[in-house]
Length: 93
Image 1 (cartoon, one colour):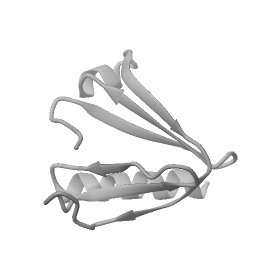
Image 2 (tube, helix red, strand yellow):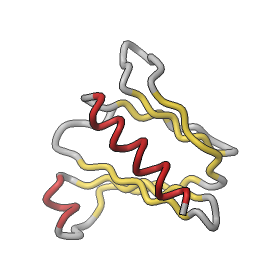
Image 3 (tube, helix red, strand yellow):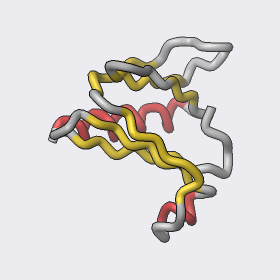
Image 4 (spheres, helix red, strand yellow):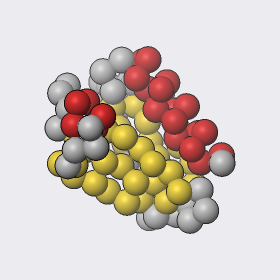
């Protein structure tokens, strides 16, 4: 689950079918292009699924890649929808 106080942002490279996830300390760090706490590059992006329940969390998003499927859980449905839109439109370019 994405913890409160942290900001996680997806960047989708539609030409190479990659998703880059970056974890920031907080939203302020993200807005000032501060240093990330962690980042993860997911190769061979295939798509995503959302809205299923995992460990009693229902605001979930699975990013489907050929080798791995990370699952993210969000505090609210609104944040989940924002992420779905970001991933969808950034990949559609």
